[in-house]
Image (cartoon, rainbow, N blue to C red; front, side):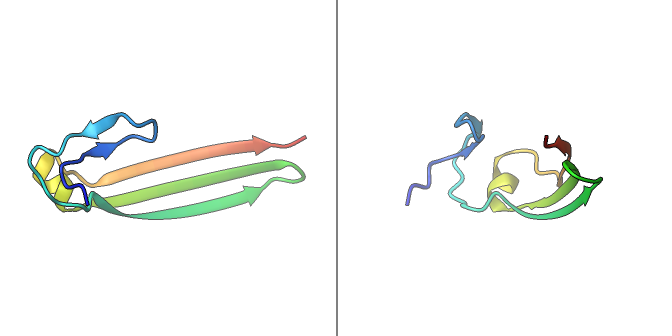
Amino acid sequence: METADGLYSPAGQILRAPNGSTQHFAATTLSLTAEYSFGRGLVFTAIHTIGKPEAFMNETGPDDDLHFTELTVQYRF
């Protein structure tokens, strides 16, 4: 297993270099999702994710807790 690797974005760009760390775990996350249909074809979705940084994040830079919220409205016709 490669240990001199980093943390990447979905597009493949490096977000955080290893800086000598050999740790494998970046974060533990929990996501909560709620969805509501306002009738035929209109759906509202809310997602909130919280995360606790693990060893890799602790060793390679700032390691604040993670919070991410996504709100979407979808209309199908």
